[in-house]
Image 1 (cartoon, helix red, strand yellow):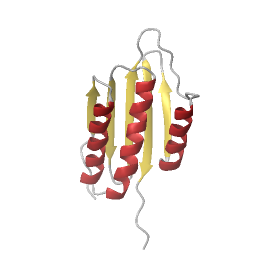
Image 2: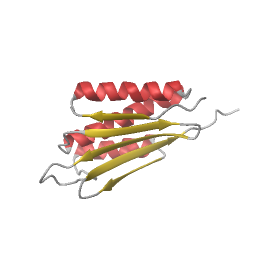
Image 3: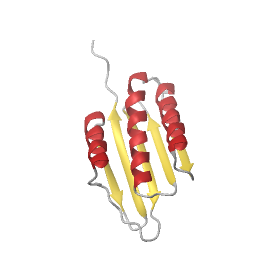
Length: 131
C-alpha cells in the first residue's frame, strides 16, 4: 500500500452528476493507495455527505480526502447561504438512514458547525488482513 496525495475539490454545482464524479474520484484515490477493499465504503459515505449538503441547500462545497496507511478520511465543508439554518442531525428519515450508514461503515464521523458553515467528516480505519 502506498500513500497518495490528498484529493481537494471545490464543487460549484451540486447535482447527481457532481456526486457521481466525486464518488469516482474518492474511489480512485483509495484504490491508488492500494486499499481496494475500502474503496466502496469510502465512495458510498462520500456520496452521503454530499447528499446531506445538497439537502441543506448548500450551493458550493469543498471536499478533502486522504488515504494513508492508517485510514481513509473525507471531509465535506459547505458555506451557509444567508438565512440558512444548520441541521447536523436532520430529523428526516433520509437523515436517519445516513447516520446509520455512517455509524455502520465508518470508524468515526462528526460535524463542526460555525456561523459560516458546516464541516462533516468520516474516518474508515485500514485493517490488516487476518493471517
